[in-house]
Structure formats: C-alpha cells, structure tokens
Length: 296
Image (tube, rainbow, N blue to C red; front, side):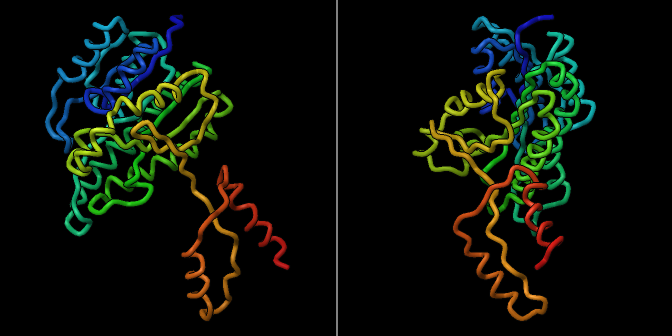
C-alpha cells in the first residue's frame, strides 16, 4: 500500500479549506480537494473551483485530485471518500470544512434555510466521518478535524442555524473521540477566525488584514498528523494565536424541594466565575449519581 498519508478536505476551493489543502500538500500529504463551487448561500456551483486548487497543488509538486461531490448528502459524502480510496488506496484524515451562510433573525428565518445550513455544516461532517470511519480505523492513526465557530460557542445575532450546527459539531467530537480512541483515531475541533468570504462582511477591515487563513492551517496540519496524540480538543485559532475552549461545571448547589428559593439558586449559578471541566458525560454525572445514591 502507498505509505503517503491521504486527507480529504471539504469546502476546499476557497478560504480556509483551500489554505488547509495547500498546507497539507506542502507537508507531504496527498489531498482530495472537495467542493461543489457553490455560492456562499449554497446555491449554484462551479465544477472548476475544486480542480483549480488540485491543479495548484500539483503545479507545486504535490499530490491532489478534485471532486465536486456534495458532501451534504449521504451519497455525496460516500463518493468523496471513494475518490480517496480509488485514487490513493487509503484515507488517513478528514478535514470537515464545508459551510454556507443564510443569515436571518430567527423570527424571519425559514425552516428551509435552517435545515440547509445545519445540513452543510453539521450533517456533512457526520456523513463524511461515517463514510471514512473504516478507512480511519485501518490507518491506525486516523484523524478528524471539524470546523466549529465562536458563533456556536457564544452565539451571534442572526445566525441561529449556523450557531446550532457549529455547537452540534462539538457533541459529535465528544462522542467520536471516545469511540475512536481504541482504533487510534484522534478527533478535534477548531473554531477559526480568518479573513474569508464568510467573515469579510462581519469583521472590520483592519482586523481582516491580520487574519489570513494561512495562519490557521498549520494547526490543522498538526492535528491531522500521525504525530498528534491529542483528541477531544476545541481550539479557537486565528491571527497566529490559539486558545483552548472547554465546557465547565460549577460546584453543585442544593435545589430547594419547593418553589421558594429556586430563583436565588439560579441567580447564584448565573454568576459562575470558574468551573470544572469533565472528560465525558459519565464523569460529569458521577457526582450527581453519587449524591442520588447516598443523599445524606
């Protein structure tokens, strides 16, 4: 079998995806460049967009093929993975980067726009991971990197669909890191801040100048490498800076049996300053279960 590691990068024709594809190829990986070439809202398509990036990689001496598979469908995700296996005989890494925007306030957002955004950001990542899973197991050092966002972590006005999808990806990471551990699969998330067509309307021009996508991609290259031993991380990254993001819990407070006093407990918890991180839901629930078993 070919000993060159192979990565599938979705949404790889522009912005962060293109940067990731170029960075992985520059570090010796064979890259499957997947992109439908759609507009920012997911409509239309340009079959030449993915091929342009693959050609750029090959012109620089790297190895790449292009596919226009729509990974927001079951068949499309399977086809993108199949391209890797047909061309290179293996798949070691998935970088789930595909995304669209259809921003509206929740009151004005259609359910069709909600579903479309969730499907491209969250479902497509799951579809690709599912299709790639046997190959990632066979690799022995399989890697998945999904693309979350501060919009999901903290909320962004007008992006209920996008934020729900981006936060949902963290739940996927938390489960897959556990299920993949025995097979050596590492699963991590980035929450990038970069100058792309998605962020240009939202960020001030002065900030955009210091947020090149190329400042994010080296981190992705490390996370998909065989040498990376970390899994389950959420890393906010941009402008040559990176921070870890964690969900934490406060100390437990006694909840009154009656209605009186509940408001005060909730108000106290709303002011939490620090907290304790947990590696899994079992760990997080353990203290509650111990109290339930012995409430004295």
